[in-house]
Each structure stands twice: as C-alpha cells, then as structure tokens.
Length: 254
Image (cartoon, rainbow, N blue to C red; front, side, top):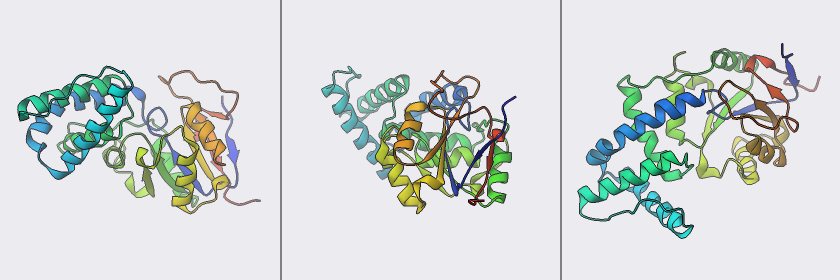
C-alpha cells in the first residue's frame, strides 16, 4: 500500500487532466471520437461564425507550419466552401490522429464538445478519488487550478459535466496552451505569476515527467500521478502517487 505523502507548505494545487484526473481512454476513445464524428456537421453550420473563423485562421497558420516542417498534412482548399470545409475536416482529423497539441484544434474541439455536453451525449469520467480530493483540498483552504493542452472552454465543460456532478466551484483558474507549452519552463513561471503565488508554494500533479521537469525548473513542487492506462514514466525524479488519496497537505510551516 502506498503511504500518504506530506507536502508543505502548499497554497495552490495545479492539475493536469488526461491521465491525472481523467482516464486517458475517455479522452482518446470518447472525446476525440466525438470530435471526429461531429466536426463536419459543426463546420457546416458554424463556418462563418466569428469565433469559428478565429479557430480556422489559427489552423491555417499551423497547417502552413506543418507544411514547412514536411509533416505532410492533407492539403487545405480555400474555395469553394464545401471543398474548404471538407479539406479542413480532413486536416482536423489528421491532427486528432497525431494527438496534436494544436491550439486551433483544441479551441475548435472545445466548441464541438460543448454541444455534446449540453445535450447529454457526453459525460466526463473522472478517477474515483478526484471529487473527494477537491472537497478535501478546498476544506483545507487550498486553491485548485487546471493546466491542460485542451482549451480553457473544454476544461470548464469537462468539470461541469462529470459523473460526480458539477465540480467547477472547486476550481479557481484554467490554463491552456495559450500560456505556453506544457513542457516549457516559462509556462509554469507565467502560471505562478498569474496566480500570484510563489512558485515553491504551488504543487503540480501530472502523469508526464517532461511536464513535471519543466515545473520543477520553474520552482514548483511536483508529484507524478501513476494511473491505470497511463504510459510508463521514469519515476526516479519525482515522488509518485497512485491516487489523490496519497496526498496530504500541510498549509503552514509547522
């Protein structure tokens, strides 16, 4: 049995989603599949909307970068409109297949998922210990934020529509890749500054060592979350937990 870990002093907990609060299978097999199945119909209706055009402009810029890097994405067609939509659908599905952290893709996916959450098609799956940990941490006076490659909208939707109910009241802030890559040190410096918390008083929990390494370099505390279905990670550089129940917090320098 894993003994509880004591981490002190901590004021703020920053959480990854995929593989940390939420099973990887839910993201890849449910959310990604839903986005694939709905992107064509979504663009057919929302293509001219200003917020959609913002996402498409971002995707076109990323497509150009993919071409420059010889990644061989499917071609984009600008006109006529049906061909433009079909080619964008092909590119979006290509990005999903690559598990791309594309900002344009993540923003568009969030808008597509919004429809699925609202009509009840989607219900977010969390690991069983998550909701209780949120309540416990809030009771102990800790703040909770999220840092995920999914858009801030997608993050809010996920935690608003979980099998354990709406958990958004427990979450103070949401950060996505508009603040920087999850493996970039500056991303964590920027998050600490945005939260107005000294970096050593923030704890980042993730299933990916590369992200934890970046957080440590920015001065944050870290825990490696090992969950069923996660990719194997080297465990020597970070303390390991198997559940949020393994984390106990001391909020003062007692």
